[in-house]
Image (cartoon, rainbow, N blue to C red; front, side):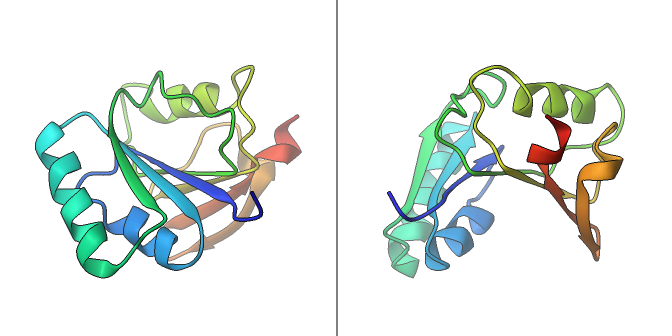
Length: 128
């Protein structure tokens, strides 16, 4: 499809996914908390975000083979951001861009396109 595919790993209440869908992305939120998936679906419907969908799932096993952009809030410590990097760079992943909120992705320094108020945009293709 011509619309890029956006995935938010750990989508919480769905705010980022709804906004991405309203901007024309086919946006998917992956969330482990079923209550937040339900809440997110309601928010998307109320906002008219028809390209938004939410799945109850595990962010570490979700299929990224059709994903163009991946968003991850993450957190420092515990190797979480390194694990995110490995996930995006794994075989079968088609991610071209990654967005990280407030936390650097170790090893992607040369892929950083922009850091605006803590929102980091990476061109993952530069890492191949």
